[in-house]
Image (cartoon, rainbow, N blue to C red; front, side, top):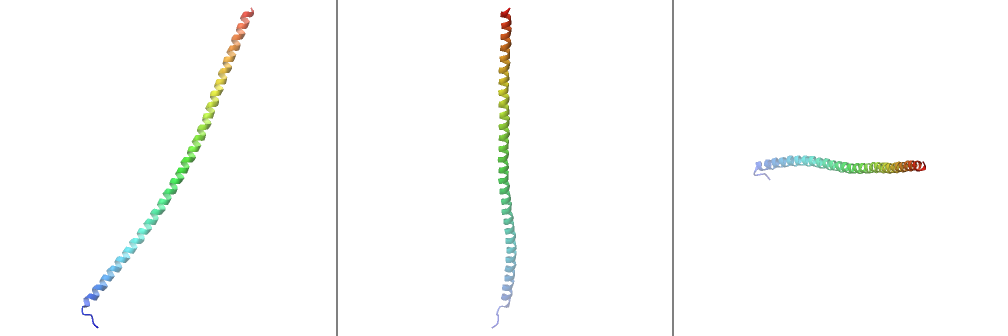
Length: 108
Protein backbone atom coordinates (compact mmCIF):
# COMPACT_ATOMS: atom_id res chain seq x y z
CA UNK A 1 0.00 0.00 0.00
CA UNK A 2 1.33 3.37 -0.97
CA UNK A 3 0.27 6.88 -0.07
CA UNK A 4 -1.00 8.63 -3.07
CA UNK A 5 -0.56 12.08 -1.63
CA UNK A 6 2.81 12.23 0.10
CA UNK A 7 2.51 15.92 1.18
CA UNK A 8 -0.60 15.08 3.17
CA UNK A 9 1.36 13.00 5.66
CA UNK A 10 3.91 15.78 6.14
CA UNK A 11 1.16 18.35 6.62
CA UNK A 12 -0.48 16.17 9.29
CA UNK A 13 2.84 15.81 11.05
CA UNK A 14 3.43 19.56 10.94
CA UNK A 15 -0.07 20.24 12.23
CA UNK A 16 0.41 17.76 15.08
CA UNK A 17 3.74 19.39 15.95
CA UNK A 18 2.10 22.81 16.03
CA UNK A 19 -0.76 21.42 18.10
CA UNK A 20 1.73 19.85 20.53
CA UNK A 21 3.60 23.16 20.86
CA UNK A 22 0.32 25.00 21.52
CA UNK A 23 -0.66 22.42 24.15
CA UNK A 24 2.72 22.79 25.88
CA UNK A 25 2.40 26.58 25.83
CA UNK A 26 -1.17 26.34 27.15
CA UNK A 27 -0.06 24.02 29.96
CA UNK A 28 2.74 26.40 30.93
CA UNK A 29 0.30 29.31 30.95
CA UNK A 30 -2.15 27.24 32.98
CA UNK A 31 0.57 26.40 35.51
CA UNK A 32 1.51 30.09 35.76
CA UNK A 33 -2.16 31.02 36.20
CA UNK A 34 -2.57 28.38 38.92
CA UNK A 35 0.47 29.73 40.77
CA UNK A 36 -0.91 33.24 40.49
CA UNK A 37 -4.25 32.01 41.82
CA UNK A 38 -2.56 30.28 44.76
CA UNK A 39 -0.60 33.47 45.51
CA UNK A 40 -3.83 35.50 45.34
CA UNK A 41 -5.55 33.09 47.74
CA UNK A 42 -2.59 33.36 50.15
CA UNK A 43 -2.67 37.15 49.94
CA UNK A 44 -6.41 37.09 50.59
CA UNK A 45 -5.85 34.90 53.66
CA UNK A 46 -3.10 37.21 54.90
CA UNK A 47 -5.35 40.24 54.40
CA UNK A 48 -8.22 38.52 56.21
CA UNK A 49 -5.95 37.61 59.13
CA UNK A 50 -4.59 41.14 59.25
CA UNK A 51 -8.14 42.53 59.28
CA UNK A 52 -9.10 40.22 62.17
CA UNK A 53 -5.95 41.19 64.11
CA UNK A 54 -6.64 44.87 63.47
CA UNK A 55 -10.21 44.50 64.73
CA UNK A 56 -8.92 42.76 67.86
CA UNK A 57 -6.43 45.60 68.40
CA UNK A 58 -9.21 48.16 67.98
CA UNK A 59 -11.32 46.31 70.55
CA UNK A 60 -8.41 46.16 73.01
CA UNK A 61 -7.71 49.86 72.52
CA UNK A 62 -11.37 50.69 73.06
CA UNK A 63 -11.45 48.70 76.31
CA UNK A 64 -8.28 50.41 77.56
CA UNK A 65 -9.69 53.84 76.66
CA UNK A 66 -12.95 53.04 78.48
CA UNK A 67 -11.04 51.96 81.59
CA UNK A 68 -8.90 55.10 81.55
CA UNK A 69 -12.01 57.27 81.14
CA UNK A 70 -13.68 55.45 84.05
CA UNK A 71 -10.64 56.06 86.26
CA UNK A 72 -10.53 59.77 85.41
CA UNK A 73 -14.29 60.06 85.86
CA UNK A 74 -13.95 58.49 89.31
CA UNK A 75 -11.10 60.89 90.17
CA UNK A 76 -13.13 63.87 88.96
CA UNK A 77 -16.14 62.72 90.99
CA UNK A 78 -13.99 62.34 94.11
CA UNK A 79 -12.47 65.78 93.53
CA UNK A 80 -15.96 67.28 93.22
CA UNK A 81 -17.08 65.52 96.40
CA UNK A 82 -13.93 66.70 98.20
CA UNK A 83 -14.62 70.25 97.01
CA UNK A 84 -18.19 70.06 98.29
CA UNK A 85 -17.00 68.75 101.65
CA UNK A 86 -14.38 71.49 101.84
CA UNK A 87 -16.96 74.19 101.06
CA UNK A 88 -19.28 72.71 103.71
CA UNK A 89 -16.43 72.86 106.21
CA UNK A 90 -15.66 76.49 105.26
CA UNK A 91 -19.31 77.48 105.67
CA UNK A 92 -19.48 75.71 109.04
CA UNK A 93 -16.34 77.52 110.20
CA UNK A 94 -17.74 80.87 109.04
CA UNK A 95 -20.92 80.07 110.99
CA UNK A 96 -18.92 79.17 114.10
CA UNK A 97 -16.90 82.40 113.80
CA UNK A 98 -20.07 84.43 113.32
CA UNK A 99 -21.65 82.71 116.32
CA UNK A 100 -18.56 83.41 118.47
CA UNK A 101 -18.51 87.07 117.40
CA UNK A 102 -22.21 87.39 118.20
CA UNK A 103 -21.72 85.64 121.57
CA UNK A 104 -18.84 87.93 122.49
CA UNK A 105 -20.82 91.04 121.48
CA UNK A 106 -23.92 90.07 123.47
CA UNK A 107 -21.87 89.05 126.50
CA UNK A 108 -20.54 92.56 126.93
